[in-house]
Every structure is written in structure tokens, then in C-alpha cells.
Length: 167
Image (cartoon, helix red, strand yellow):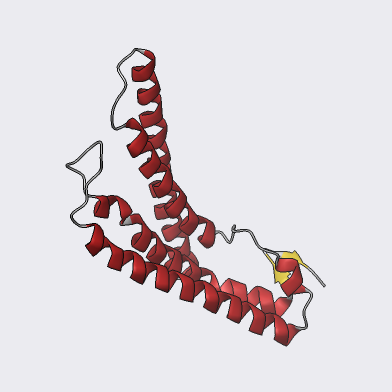
């Protein structure tokens, strides 16, 4: 199996996760609005919508990393001399990896602290379960970054970014 095939399969997995979460959020918000309009507000609506929105954001960030769609200024790196481009790209990627490794570790550590807390509106649901999105998505982001690292280095060597020549 090639790296491109692995990356494509991983992208499909992240897309499915994002689509399911977005659909769940859309349905949940619609149901909440209908019930509120009918005069029967759901007590859990706001809390669950906030959690789903956070989940869409975190899991979607891993998909954006895989697609190299996060905000950046690649033109600055592309205008550097070839050797400096590669070094700059490596340093930037090292910072990204370091940040998400720390985020995964701290996010996982916090889950023990939250183990006894529950949602206000749904006491059967643990806050640790809802916050597990942080370490899980951090690991997904690390995987995505590792899968695109060869392309990042290739583009740094060539002086291109996302298929655009900058000379």
C-alpha cells in the first residue's frame, strides 16, 4: 500500500467523521429549535450542541491538516533560498508536532481529573467522555501531519506550496 493510498483512506475516514458530526449537529439544532418553538424546550439542547460543535472543530482540524488547508503564509517560506526553505519547513513541522504531542498528553491527563464530572443537563454522560475529543483529535492531527510531511519537504525543496510555483 502506497503513502498516497494510506493518505486517501485516512482522508475518507476523517471526512466520514466530520460529515456524521455535522449531520448530528444539524439534526440536534433543528430538533431543539422545533421543540423550543412548540413550547417544550429540551434541557440538554444547548450543552449537546456546544459539544458537537467542538467535536466538529477538533476532528475537522485533522482533516484540514491532511489537506494542508490551515492558515499560513507559505509565500514567505517559498521565497527563501532552497536550503533555508527546507530548514524552515522542518522547524515549523517540528513545532506543530511538538504542540500536538503536548496537547495529546495534557488532554489525556486531564481526563482523569474529569472522570467524576458529568454533564449538567445529562448527568449520565461523563465530561471526560465529551472532552476525550482533545487527545483523540490531537493524535489524528499528528497522523495527518506525518502523512503530509513528505509533500511539505518536497514543496520546500522545489520552492512551491500546494502545487503553486513561487520563484
